[in-house]
Length: 136
Image (cartoon, rainbow, N blue to C red; front, side):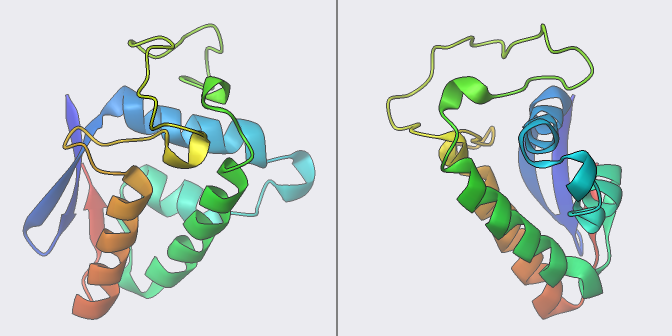
């Protein structure tokens, strides 16, 4: 089943639920420690659970910018497909495009767009329109 972001009736297709879970799993595995477990509260509580209030869009955008910058230091083979089962790997295995140089550009939506950029666009639209984002 596919997952999309919805803002005021329009949608942006992300990809499969397992793909999106991998994105959050990789963030959590590599960037969240016991000392920083509350570093991205709106990201992990609101966006991950499917509803972002437009008033919180800037905080999530700031979080994602930090994450993308940190991901530049992780090779593509550091992807975590499922934090609940670390033995799982992506369906495509290690067969990825040569354009993927780090975790910062690893995640590409089912429409072929960079996931970070799609999220930034959605968050900007949310702020501009003063409309919440829903993830379904």
